Image 1: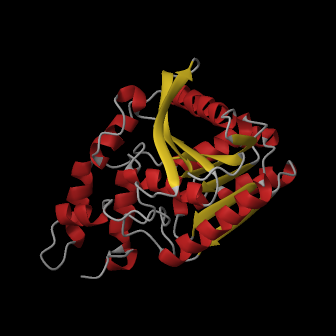
Image 2 (image 1 turned 45 degrees about the vertical axis):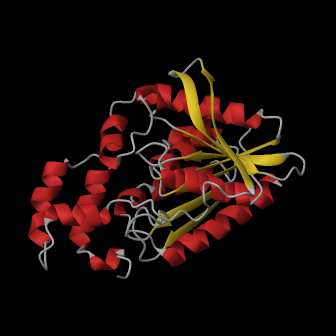
Length: 294
């Protein structure tokens, strides 16, 4: 059976799913509204199952001998008290390396984000992905439960935890002091936020993330590589104001919009994945980090 893609779903179902994923629509409401678009004996619950992630085939295997991976914990005095996350780095010693903070979507540190972290380590970086849900017990292994837990976080404390994670990562003995951040969806918004509060940040790559308030943009010192999806009306609606603020503050940035791609196009565990867009965005991301962080 061939892999499902976004084109296999009615566009209205994709909009409903985006609302469900981002908490604007309950599961019950999704099922009720999606039932109008069921065909071929597939139920609304079946549509939701088809659209939900499958973590069966990571691109960088957890046991890859080229990597060292482990979970780390450390204090976060201004946040929830302690941060826990997944650290990946090349196994072969070759001097100090640039460090990349990886920020997940609004479900916590799931297997897909751990895979992203390993992919960056295979490119030669020290990569670390914190789990925002750690104070609430950590990623629960179920995407629906994770989404529900995420809504219970105190975002002020969560932001402080990510700042603490960035500073911890930057100070690792195997890191060379050059720091980047990449994030997806919620994490894209966090990457934008971190750029406004970390003057030492050397590069930031938000994938389809919410833009920061225009008043905060003058604080950005890091060059930005911004990836957006052509069909992502919600995120693209904020782009003109963000672009104007970036230009006014002379912040170096590149902005790429991937025509025909859906929000979440980089996530290869769901049908919204767009292989061509994801491959191009990933190549651009790795090249950007290597050029800006050395």
